[in-house]
Structures are given as structure tokens and as C-alpha cells.
Amino acid sequence: MNRSLLASVFLPSPNIEPRRDGIAPDMLVLHYTGMPDARKACRWLCDPVSKVSCHYLVDENGAITQMVDEGMRAWHAGVSSWKGQDDLNSCSIGIEIQNPGHAAGYPDFPEAQMLAVIALCKDIMARHAIHPGRVLAHSDIAPLRKIDPGEKFDWGRLHAQGIGHWVRPEPIEGGTFLQMGDKGQAVEALQGMLRLYGYGVEINGLYDDATQATVCAFQRHFRPSRVDGIADSSTVITLHRLLQDQQQV
Image 1 (cartoon, rainbow, N blue to C red):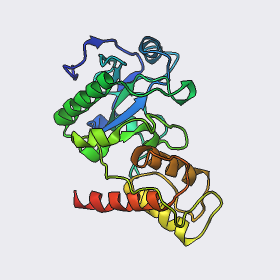
Image 2 (image 1 turned 90 degrees about the vertical axis):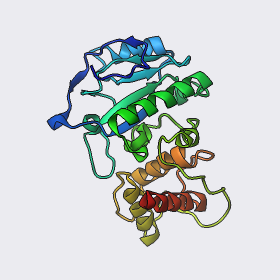
Image 3 (image 1 turned 180 degrees about the vertical axis):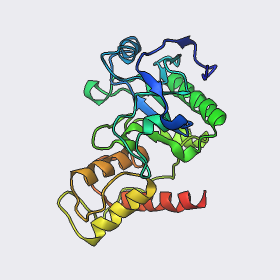
């Protein structure tokens, strides 16, 4: 069985299938459960009616439950894309982090939980040779549908442990910005940078719903102090730095 020795419980989910064409996992996707507690989340992820599953769930106390063999395709990413690739379920391992989510107060992620997430990510990355830049938020790969694990999740801390891509966000100041309804070459350039980084936004020169959602997803991950969907100078400069750093890796 392909598994992490950090998992204390194996609770098999029926919501699985083989990875397409025998693809090996090269991506980690981090979620929050959006459920009241880990027990209810486990029941839902193991219910055939739900048609969802994940490889691992990390509860508030840091206990790790495995539900799907890493060699199998779990149903966690849904309709999603990254760097022009879809069917991310076939190439990824999904980790659900117990948190009731934005609709239920969105509490902080406890210390024990963060330590367990870091340890689990490092273990999986080492065994599958997953590049740090291929550790992503659910909101990154499906910005029109998902907002998890959200702006309270400490991606900077993970990056310090070799997990995920990160640069220090540019401070929020005044200056020019782009927002909903804008159009033209500046919007096209912004969309081009977001797409070059990996987001599945269309380059059409229109600051539409999809562009705003993608900017929000970017901010949740890389500039979490303000998530408003407005591409201000802080957002654009941070994106530019990430692209520069990505090219040097």
C-alpha cells in the first residue's frame, strides 16, 4: 500500500478509481473540509453518495487519517486546471485540513494541525519527488468554485520548510490598479502573467468574473492581508516577483 507512516488510521473511501494512464502523482493540493468537525468530514468523504474523497485528512489535533491509497485517484480537485493541465485528480494527492471554513467563522488553524500538515507534506514530497511549486491551494486550481484553505493558512511558514512557492508580499500602498469592468492591454498583461504562473484564466483583455476570482485566489495564497479581487500594485508586484523567482528555480 502506498501510504504515509504518519497516518494513525486508515479509513478507506469507496470514492476512488485508477489514475488515468497510470500517471504518477507530482502535485499536492491542500483543502479545508468546510465541515463542523473531523468525524463528520470523514463520514462524508467515505460516503459513496458524496462522490468526493481525499488521500489524507488532518484533524484539529494533528491526527492524520488516510482514506485513499496514494497510487489511486481520489475525487478531491473537481473541475480544475494548472499550467494548462486538467484532470488534476489523476496527477495529485489531496490533503483535507479540518476547518469549518468561511461560512462557519473560519477559525485559525491550530499549531498541532499546522505541524502535522507540514510533516505530512514533507513526507509525501520526499517519496514522490514533488517540486515545491507543485504544492497548491484548492482555490489556485479552481478559483471560480473554491476559496480553501483560505487566507489564514500560513503558506509562508510552509515555504520556510521547503513546501510551496512563496515570496514576501509587496506592502499595500496606493497607486494604479485594475478591477472589475476594466479592459484593454493592461488587463491582458495581468491575465498573461497569471496564466504564465499557472492559473487557468483566459487572456481576453476583460476584467471579468473569472479574472476577479483568479486575482482573489492569488491574493489568498500570496497576498493574504487583503483579498478583494482588485489588482493593485501590491498584487501585481508580488506576482511579478513570483514569476521571476519561478524562472530561477
